[in-house]
Picture 1: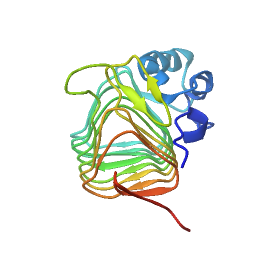
Picture 2: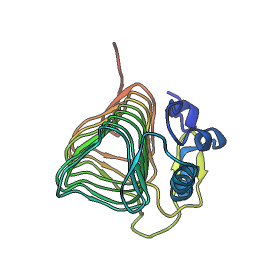
Picture 3: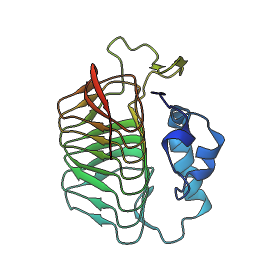
Picture 4: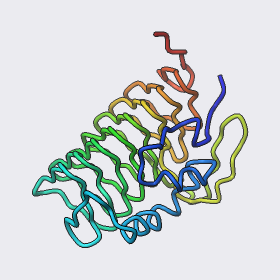
Length: 221
């Protein structure tokens, strides 16, 4: 099973406001140091159909924000996204349309494409989540190694990223079960599913079910 890590292998980014930046990069972690810059460039260029909800915070049409949610800029929230009670956006967040930022979930320096759902008690930091990606309750995208060294992506080869912080890179339609931990630099291939209570590291191929790191099954229709 090929362990795919390139942007065009993981994501359809055609509808994203950040599509030009996706197109310039080969690997998704290359976007992480640029997310704040991307958001500020988009705001400076004008966002048709968006309104400024708070300083440096722009929301699309039909966005709902719970009174107890906290949104800090710079961030852009796509149309019809639901921001639930206690959600905490620390800044540098760009979401697509129809996303869910769930109760008591924290987001920082991340890109969410369309229809992403992070509905309960999640931490999403230094991450890129693809269209229709879903994280179950309590899923954590761990983004910093305990020793603080730079993160290496371990796929079919080792990729030296030069970055200390990388969370999860989840491909389109990736689904991660409740209370799983995605260790720093984890890549989940398109359409793959992770069982609850799983500690995941490395690169997971597309179209598989991860029952444990020692038990990965090819998904059958």
